[in-house]
Image 1 (cartoon, helix red, strand yellow):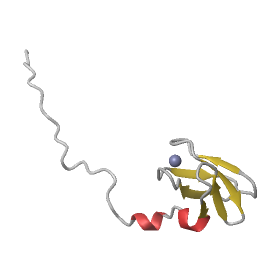
Image 2 (image 1 turned 180 degrees about the vertical axis):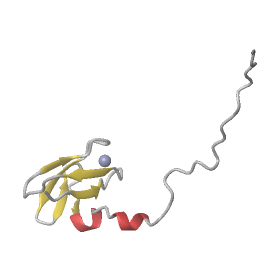
Image 3 (image 1 turned 135 degrees about the vertical axis):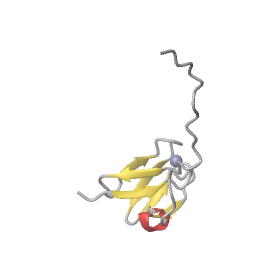
Image 4 (image 1 turned 180 degrees about the horizontal axis):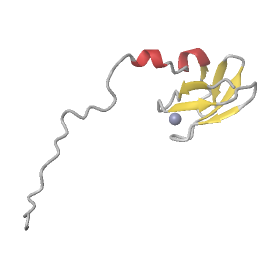
Length: 85
Ligand SMILES: [Zn+2]
């Protein structure tokens, strides 16, 4: 199964499409934008704007090697427990 990953042209939310066919409706869960698949383009119903699917395609390579979560600045503060033996 081919999974196409695109970014919502409105809000940038990453949308995973497990299928894509002519006339298919895609709705962004975040902003609610509805797009229709037309050939290799997406027609946004709200604005009537047309976006090339390739231009919206989310490619992991673009992310490069940036660290998503850096824990280095996280300090595990010691609690002031009163140990009573
Ligand atoms: Zn969106």
